[in-house]
Image 1 (cartoon, helix red, strand yellow):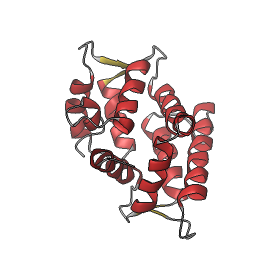
Image 2 (cartoon, one colour; image 1 turned 90 degrees about the horizontal axis):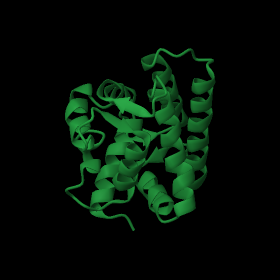
Image 3 (cartoon, one colour; image 1 turned 60 degrees about the vertical axis):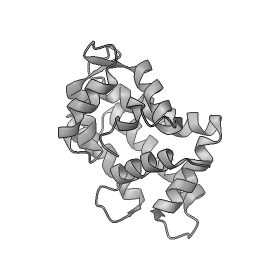
Image 4 (tube, rainbow, N blue to C red; image 1 turned 135 degrees about the vertical axis):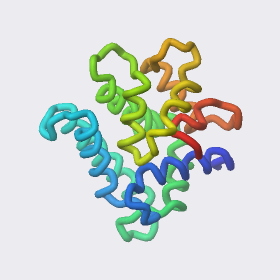
Length: 181
């Protein structure tokens, strides 16, 4: 069962995907994310990275729709989203497949130079893609960059993602990795 803190963080994530703020998610919301990544990163829509992202977001949508759309209306409301993530977070293999694999792919796209790190500027671009005001990016980044080197490594981000989804410590910096929640 999701804790109150997990529910708050998952509400934030739901809102990040719900770019048109209509209080439900549809296939088009996931397609838009891949298109926005291509635009923000100035990558051609036919590039292998963008095609891989589009395919992965389509897989995310299909999994979400098949497992969470209790009403069968091809829309995912917040309660369906939360029930879905309650299931995902209780199954390590499903979590790795649904969450970690997507985060790794997104990291690869935002790590433009392939050095295994994301800068504050690249983190701000991620905020733009996910409908989070970029003004929150510097503060979030500074909190997440615990070693103060000016970068977030892939491993650091994956640990933070785990804490964001699975953690229940109200003082964890991972709670605010995508801005206020």
